Length: 171
Image 1: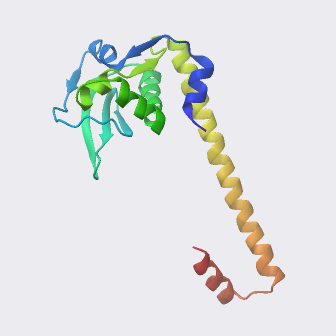
Image 2: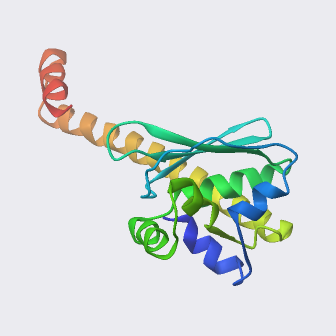
């Protein structure tokens, strides 16, 4: 499940680019000054009200791109969820349609309906609810798998030693 489903469901074509978002901020720091040009997967860290954007390097590691202040907790989460869930096609589109080095390209990325607090809040809450449901389902699946394993062990009347051997070979 991708967040873009919820963004499409609740947002309009009204977008604002990251440059405008950070220009409104009381605190902003454009950190990256290198020559890399290709936008890759994002990592977004949130520390209190400071949002830090990172982009993957072609080798290992990440480029720290910029930091800015965002006082609205839903907007902080929204930009994090949006950027961290950009798929390969969207990243390729960004690289093809935007110019400049890595930071300049990132500053041109448009965030849908970022100025509409009610939309941002709705998308964030929906995304977090679905993520919680996924976690609960994964726990239920894990529990059911263990119950099935135990039934099979009982069916074949396995000893504790035999069960240990089986489980070591499964993992």
